[in-house]
Length: 64
Image (cartoon, rainbow, N blue to C red; front, side, top):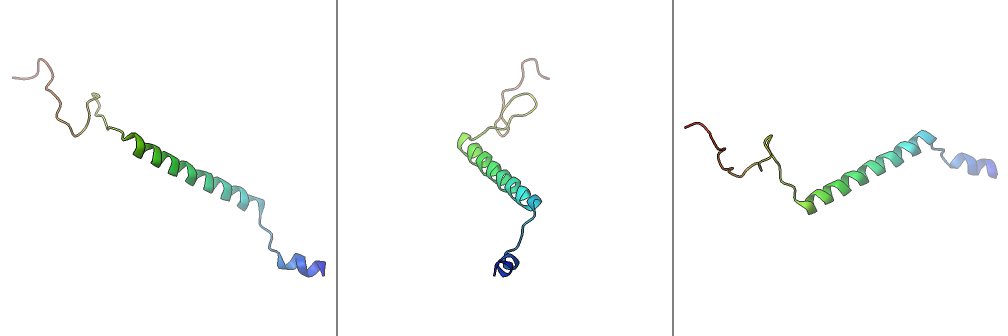
């Protein structure tokens, strides 16, 4: 009776369990970061620190 019970259950390799946990953790981090960036509403900056998509005032002493 016990042998039939052992045969019916499938064994899962420990590596599969560990990789599954890592995968779920990675997905949770992605969802958390996505939600945080949507809430914060970041502004992209160019290499000079000016917001992208907005017209910045010309620099003093620019070309004439």
